[in-house]
Length: 150
Image (cartoon, rainbow, N blue to C red):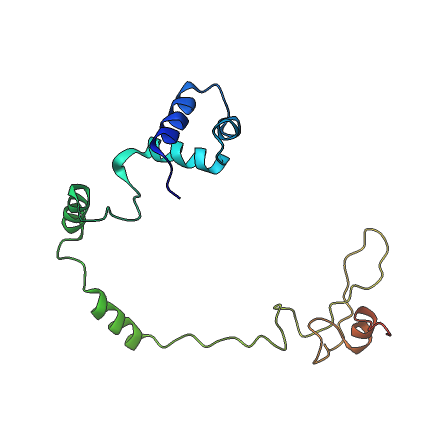
């Protein structure tokens, strides 16, 4: 969206005065609060531009960044392509862990918490876990996952 220069000037003057909030400035000028915030942000940032993207056209700022990067990099860094090829050949990919039958890293026993008196240690059922259940034996799986009749 392109904003008229006089609107930008009015926004910058209002922000510089510091009396109104962005919402009040936006309401008075007929723009959104985000437009006011964006114009103010770009004015504070100045001509430096975004640090993530170099200026288009390869201006002086872009050339100075490239020069600084080349001084930092020097010849001590290996080539990126050779590094990728070497590391791919040297280390095989890690084997993928199966998601089932134990997706949560639980022990292979039922994790149903048994009834206990207050202050007693937590005790689990401990029966073998059902193959189709992530954490419970057959009996406790049936109690947890009740299918509603339709």
